[in-house]
Image (tube, rainbow over all chains, first blue to last red; front, side):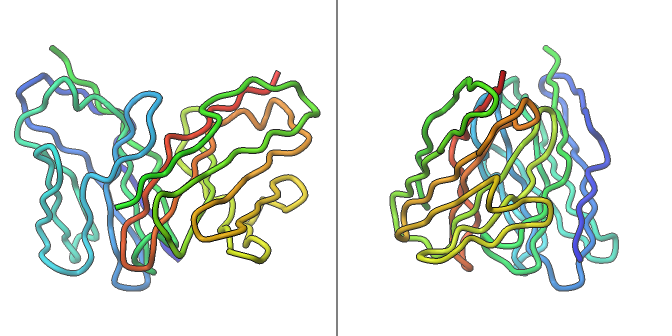
Length: 114
Length: 113
């Protein structure tokens, strides 16, 4: 069985400051891990993915995440928040790889203060 | 990558009626899925749409309530049957392959009154 825990339901940061969204996972296999973003009234867009290559994964819009097997974590970071980053972020795990067998976290709502 | 078009984008329906949501992918994909996102919640997988055969449903979802078709590799429909206000959600189509990430449509925002 696999599961995902997003440790914060809401995160609020000031524009220009760093962003940290925390995610812990549980999986019986070597998992694939993803971060998706959902802007209001929009579909989901892939930010980045980890599939057993480099543990530090760079994504779009300046986001990156580090896979730490010992800590079973896959936290999402960005050095400097922008107002356009305000959205819902989902951490996702899959033990099958690809588009199949996805388990979504409950989501973290990122608020950017001007 | 794949571009997924879903329609309608939103609808308001009377209880007891049914709504069919369409999902079109711009390239051939091996896998298509339907998810539900209840208000303020995360995504829950309803079923895997199988080409030319019955869909594979997750626990808690049944074919009579959510019939799904997938006549070819690029098209699928989800019907929400005999709707009640509890069915008010966003329904999302997803597609991909074993070697790609999942791509998502814009979703269908359904309100049942």
